[in-house]
Image 1 (spheres, rainbow, N blue to C red):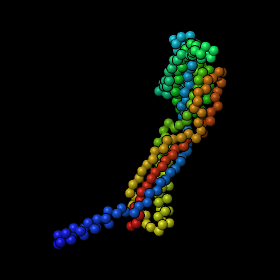
Image 2: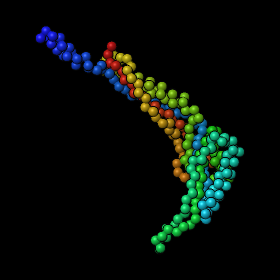
Image 3: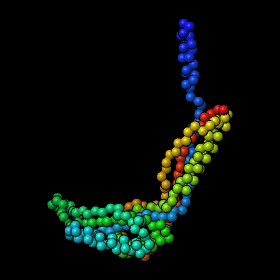
Image 4: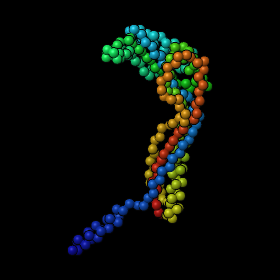
Length: 230
């Protein structure tokens, strides 16, 4: 019994030692906006032909003219990238016979273009639509360097969480202790205005395309864990 008594005493004290320190978990969030300074847009050409080669040749000829015009408009090669290339058979279903009727082939080629001068975006779109492009899809706005805007959103999110932690601790009548943990929740940058991301087939080329860039919004969320008590 002389040996077991100290051991039993220690075992009885372990639950008290294992109890976690009181803490508070708060989340902070922030949204910061800025005017975009670049845009990306997909332009392309789509043509039909009796053969796959004919359809692709017509499409390639049109897109060659588009690429040349983009270069003339000051778009650098690094800001042009082929996004989709497709050749497919054109088939029409005949209800009377119940069979598919071959009607040739269709080829399409889509180019994603970055425009770094938004003042030139409307004229550039008007120019390429006049020089061979006949499809236009999703227009997105962004920032060439989003880092500063994202960092500002993070700073404000942390400040929001710190404010909440102090407020809750004060309201509860307990002192706010040291910061134990910081967890960041990544949030994508979201344009507040965006052209609908759908394909548009252009029948006639406008001289200039009116564009409203709107604002870019950076969001940040952070979770802070504080100890409570002295």
